[in-house]
Amino acid sequence: MILKSKIIIVFASLLLVLTFFFPLWYIDLEAPQYPEGIGLEIWLNKITGQKPNDLDNINGLNHYIGMKEIEPDAIPELKIMPFILIFLILFGLTSGFTGKRVLVYVWITLFVVLAAVGLYDFYMWEYDYGHNLNPNAAIKIPGMVYQPPLIGSKMLLNFNAISMPDISFYILVLVVALAVVALFLDKKSKKENVKHD
Image 1: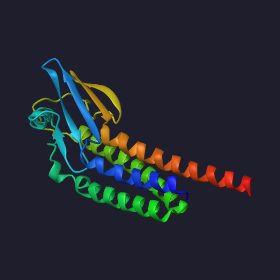
Image 2: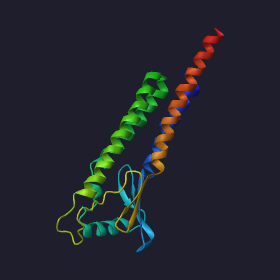
Image 3: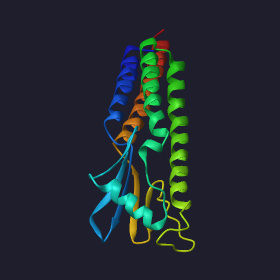
Image 4: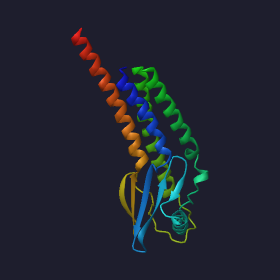
């Protein structure tokens, strides 16, 4: 690979470090009784409230309708994801320093596969929380489920649930885009060199 492409890959790999400092996803809940809204931020290694008491408030609401409590320590993915990101950083740096195109293709493929698996896992987590309700809940509405949308908004009783990617998700998209640009520039450079020969 040309030097410019190698530098882009190394830079993109180092950008991944930022995903440890910003949320990956957020879920907002808007309702008349919460004029400022309440919400969750999903990070690589934790789930927090958007404001200090939001997670406790959401767990309190969930209790009344029979949803399980959201316990970040009980979610194995939050323990695994930081190691996956460290692996992707190291793999990207190796790809950049060695300049092997095949490694960059593998790196991009890993991103796509892991993103698909991650979105499916998140959907199943939301499904479990929204469908497996306590039959002894204080508030029971026959046929009602409380699964937030994977992406977008959905009314759940009097709450508008909004689920969207957050900063770290867009960093991941940028990293893949930079890897594709690096491959394109390398290929373009090789074609130009062939023409000049």
